[in-house]
Length: 249
Ligand code: MF3
Ligand code: CO
Image 1 (cartoon, helix red, strand yellow):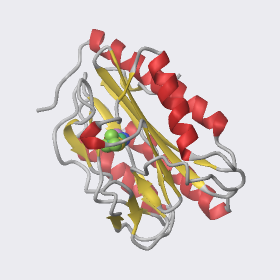
Image 2 (spheres, helix red, strand yellow):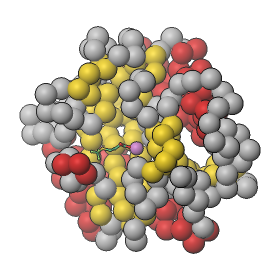
Image 3 (tube, helix red, strand yellow):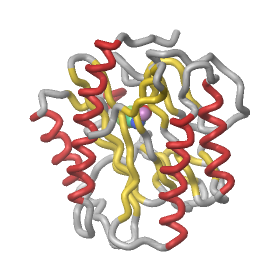
């Protein structure tokens, strides 16, 4: 069942989204060679708690940290570590979730560390664009898979592949609500989109093929071919006036 949110509930989700966006602004300032993913996790967790918000990931199915920090061939769910030191030319996806007054915001962004190769910059630009192509389809009267199809089409047009094994999701009082939102598929399928739906749309796009595997820590997802991967995510609300992005400043 897809839970519709009232205007009042959307205002609370906007507050949660704002905390997540502010945490991203903090991360964006910190990312440079020599910083560890542990440092990023500490800073984000401190910030979220100071806002009287609750980190959404910590303890979720046993996840040990407040952010996911996924470097280069890590697709999602990289666990922050003092041993992962950012180096010039790398990329890092930082995924952040927070609860405010019982509602969740969830957003991921992939950041370049210093200067990256042109092909890598193309991956970042294309994945961000694919997210916005998906958001553009999040309109009353469209069907859910119109979002999926728009994401896939944009990523594949640019020669990249979209991950199949992980999906976006409804979001609200729970971080993960119905529906699941694949980043691929034909248009015109699935439930009709309604005003008051809140979705986390999150394309994961690979330079190589779309196959991924989970490491023995049972969290870290890497590309099978070890080519690099990018991940961008916003929490959005569907309204009669069109999609509204909640995870912005
Ligand atoms: N954005 C991710 C998701 O939607 C973050 C969850 S990480 C977890 O699943 F550790 F909390 F699982
Ligand atoms: Co998510």
